[in-house]
Image 1 (tube, one colour):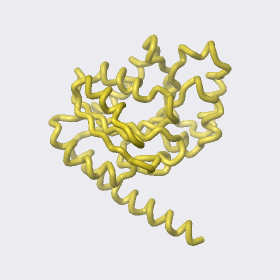
Image 2 (cartoon, helix red, strand yellow):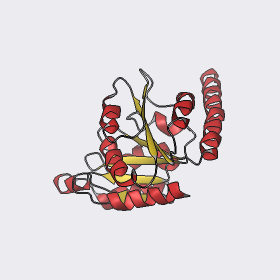
Image 3 (tube, one colour):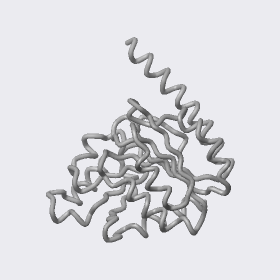
Image 4 (cartoon, one colour):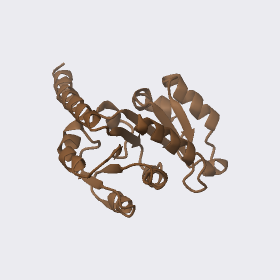
Length: 217
């Protein structure tokens, strides 16, 4: 009983700060997505392909969450966009307080219309924390099990978009795309699903156009 009370207080403070983040971002016309996946899904490469397609259309920025390194942030800096690193240490997720502290930096970066938050690789904790984003994007790859939505329902319930990545590798695995979609939609029938490959480019244009439309308002 005592543990439950502590959790409620932590999430309550987080949610209140997330609302402040959301209000501040919306006032500046910044559309924000929170990308969540397990490690190795290809999330950073997917962000790179997205940046390549959208950076000429409007200003965008990335906030990178990582346990220990800034390796992913260094990759994204090559695209000459604003990138901020948050190293979480032992924390397995970003929280609203961390994002709140990056907002002054973000607002100094000029005309940013799209903010991408790359969360720490983890399908459990990030699903519980509202950061003030407009939508969560769940990413899974065909090198994982097609039963992931059933095993981690909180993320798939909270997300508005599911990206199934690395579909070029599907013939070499026992991943069943149809079953993965059915499992995801059984958790959240409102999910918009994209199937992508950062190797051959499949689905990248469709995903980027969808995101651009959201960012354009």
